[in-house]
Length: 232
Length: 77
Image (cartoon, rainbow over all chains, first blue to last red; front, side):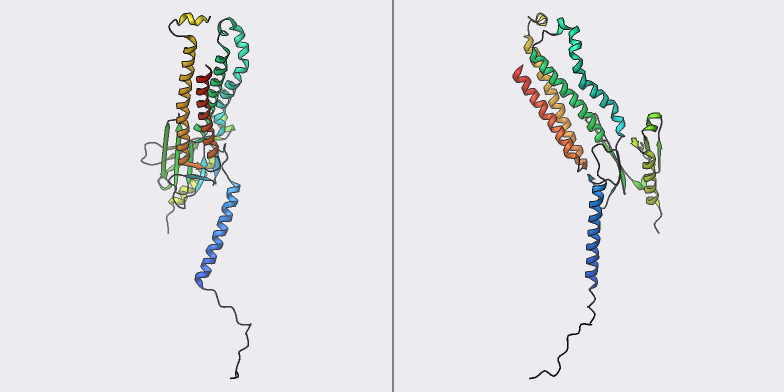
């Protein structure tokens, strides 16, 4: 039977509007893409180096009990200049044996009767001791960390190899933040003590020898204000 | 003849040195084992993805060095 009417293909028909849920899905995807791009960009921008002592919005740092959506805004260690004492002492100890033959010359009659292998072992033990001295001092500095996240403040103290103390407080509990920078060296190298006061607590949070203390206080102050703003 | 040997008539001088070195090496091993344990524990509290391996490896290297020093002392003294 012949066709009476065959509809011509209509190219002017506007495309059917996409469904609402597919739009949302697309938006979510593009947002996710944008976020991951931003994340990769920022991780390349702001990694915490081995000797970093002050980092805003650091990347690559996570901590135990970190909540979902909790972001580290400030990462603080003691100023690296505070390590100068042990670095100098360690260097002095490392180069001291160079001058040992001169010292031994004066004690030639009384000390050189030891067998050669004894001196070899003594040297090895001595340099292991120097290496341990460097290592312990470095890890003590490295693991003394203060973190400020968008939810709380974390103070991690590590000293004498066997002492570990972790204190946490929520930003809403913080009453006042201040800093002190006393002395010519502290002023020159721009580091000081940041004091975070919490009402009712026996001890205040203290960030010792923090680099850029003014900056740290400003960041904390802004966060506390935001936290304490009345929600409308 | 070692002059100190006269002061230690009942202990052979070489043996005395050997025991001294081994005791110090053992102390280093225990100390560095605690240090390595603490490094791993602290790294689990705060993890710095870019540097944590460096700290862990340095702690292990020192521990291995102390063990090898103990064995060297045992062998050559």
